[in-house]
Amino acid sequence: KAGVTQTPRYLIKTRGQQVTLSCSPISGHRSVSWYQQTPGQGLQFLFEYFSETQRNKGNFPGRFSGRQFSNSRSEMNVSTLELGDSALYLCASSSDYSTGELFFGEGSRLTVL
Amino acid sequence: QKEVEQNSGPLSVPEGAIASLNCTYSDRGSQSFFWYRQYSGKSPELIMFIYSNGDKEDGRFTAQLNKASQYVSLLIRDSQPSDSATYLCAVNRAAGNKLTFGGGTRVLVKP
Image (cartoon, rainbow over all chains, first blue to last red; front, side, top):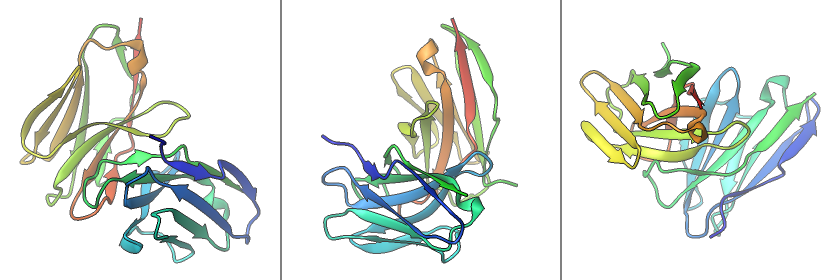
C-alpha cells in the first residue's frame, strides 16, 4: 500500500510569490491534514479536510489556504510568501475523521528568499 | 505557557536501559493522546496512542496517562540505538484530527 505522497519535495521561492503544494493520501483515507514544521515553532496545525470540506483550521493567516478534491487528494496554497514561511510542510492522512492516527508524507521543504 | 510541554533533551540512555519521556498539557478538554517518533530528516510516525487513564503497553513501549495531573508519559524498555530519535507528544481536544504537538524530546541511546 503506497504511503502519503507529497510534491514537490523541495522548492525555492522569493518573497511575494505564491506556492501550491500537493498531497495524495493513502488509498482509502478520507482525511487530509496539513502541518507546518519549523525549528522554532515545531509542528503546527494548518488545516484539515474531510470529504472535500475544511473541518478544522489552525491559527495561520488567510494567505494559507487549501482544498480537497473528490479523490481525497489535497492541495495547499500560500500566497504573498514571506521569509517566515520557510518551513517543512507536512501532509498527513487518516482513515477517518477524529482518529488522531496520522500517517505523514515526507514533506515539502519550502525556502523563501 | 505552551499547550503541550516536553523537555527538549537530549535524554541520553545506555543501551538496554529504560527511557522515560514526559509530557504535560494545559487543556483539560483534551481527549486523546499520541506519541510520534521522528528520525532526523524524516517525517513523524505514530508509535502509541492512549485515550483512558492508566497504562497501555505495545511491545517495548508503554504509554501512561493521568488526566487529573494532565500528564502523559512514554517508557521505552530495553532501549536500542535505533530508538535514537525525537519523540513528539500530541493531544487532540475534540472532533477531527487537529493535533497539538509538543516540541519533542530528543533521545540518544548509546551502545
